[in-house]
Amino acid sequence: MIVKKFIPQEFAANNYLVYNDSNEAAKEAVLFDCAGSNKEIFKFIDENGLNLKYILITHAHFDHVGGLKEFKEKYPNAKVLMAKADEKLYENLTLQCDMFGHRRVESVKIDEFIDDTKEIEFAGGKIKVISTPGHSAGSVCYLTEDNLFAGDTLFLEEIGRCDLPTGSFKEIEHSIKEKLFKLEDNIKVFTGHGDNTTIGHEKIHNAYFGINSIYS
Image 1 (cartoon, rainbow, N blue to C red):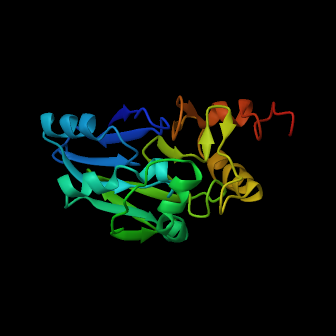
Image 2: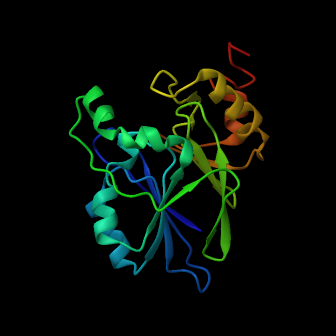
């Protein structure tokens, strides 16, 4: 499995294009979050002959869904999946943008609302949905093989902010301690902003919930 990272200039919310070149399903690709860098990603998909099957949204903040309209226009068969619990947040993209003084983002129809009962078939394997509310009510992480796409729930030695609408520190604490920290230490964490990390590193060094945290 190959993970290609794209970072748009605005808000630097990471996009991850994942594809597999080791079997017959090699041409299938999944995009985790759709924050921008559209032209760069379009070029990469087309030059490598990839078939974009899904766009998987970790949460409905405008900086993680801002590129959806353009993507759906170019790849109409790619299905957009997002947690049902973030539907109201998604319906208020205009208000979100206005709060941050950002140009308004146009929404598209979500093809399927998901929760942690969902497993997504991809390239001969599966992507497991893990509900991790806290940064937003519908924040989710996606686990495939030893790769976790964590959105803004877990960062390198940090956590996502909890002071935005539908956020909750109590919920993000439960999500990280009782769900993400139950995963194997070797799991690679692809974060929504900034550098990647691992579950093992965060169990020790996370500023809020690691064993070396001053809050522990």
